[in-house]
Image (tube, rainbow, N blue to C red; front, side):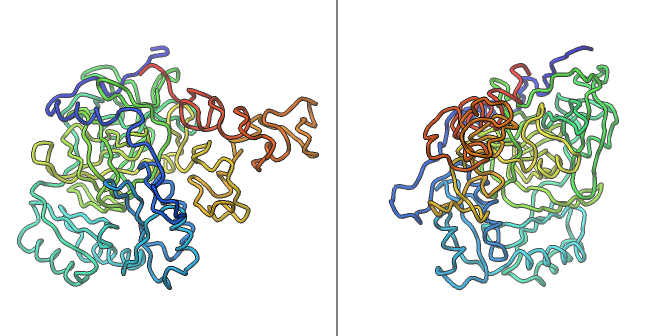
Length: 493
């Protein structure tokens, strides 16, 4: 097999096809464009796209330090809401800066440390098959869920444990379904008699093409095919399940396989540009081989699920439905951000239920892979204007010294010119700041010392080739990943 172009999620939207097409219609280009609030007040809460809200939340978590107590995305108002604890009021400097950045700030009672302690109590006292818990920043509590198998003495145990924590710390709800992993059924990747779904194509640490899927799929079979009873095309390299996650890295057997960084939605494809952390309240989409495209919201983070096979930690809880065969399938945003891999849950796409996902960022870091063909991996900042091009941040606090606003993707590591800003030409040396490379004697694109090292070049103005707005070189490119236009996205799938 040579230079095979692999289509992992075929154009099959079976049961619930109408709903799937409805979800696909939401994924139109330029939907929910980011914009500022209508007031001239610098502290006005801004309307943000979900991806921008996630970036801003990450920056504010670093800025606020111990005062940060989680955040969530208000999808209706398109606003980022940030929880804070132990603050002395609006005069607190970091709170003022958070408001200037455009976030809605609210004081809450439970700190992250207190919520973590409560979760440890649940783990110690109530690790019961069929239960799950996750942090819900909207309520500033831990949401505990018990499925239909938790009855009798098991229910009494989980109920009494939650009551011990107190009504202000945790809430308990009952699920009509049963928590299971979603192996079997569907039409995607096949191995050892099981069927799963491919999550995202990635590049392994050794440069070979690979993909991510669920860990419980990876431990079910070593080799996987793209057709039932077909010859294997990929072999499991690493798999984690149960334990600290549910993810597997599967390498394509043919090193020449072209593994496009995109999700096949059935009637269109969506380029996947980078991995991002989940934000509670964000609208997300799931693609799976059994039920096709479905959407919903993120409900909780750092979820622990007690499956029959064992306990899995560090998951994302959502209300997106899933069914057997959807395991390993991709969870993403309409902006092309990779969020998670389908792990399991309860219910189905007729009655609904809870579904849990492995965070992609954690999986990438654990297996040492990057998204797509060398695309942006976990924790990488997107270049261009959205990553702080042109911003000044001398103290590295993630706040623009000129505007007082948080730099999305910001801080010193994502300032203008950092891998994607002014002075793009790699290796240029300009010690005297005359815009001429001291080594080659040639003009530096976007030149001048300040434009070559990530600083602000007042003479560069709106130079399309050198100041963070270049369509082909710095984060505003067609692939949206800070590389040359189209890099990391293969046209075929």
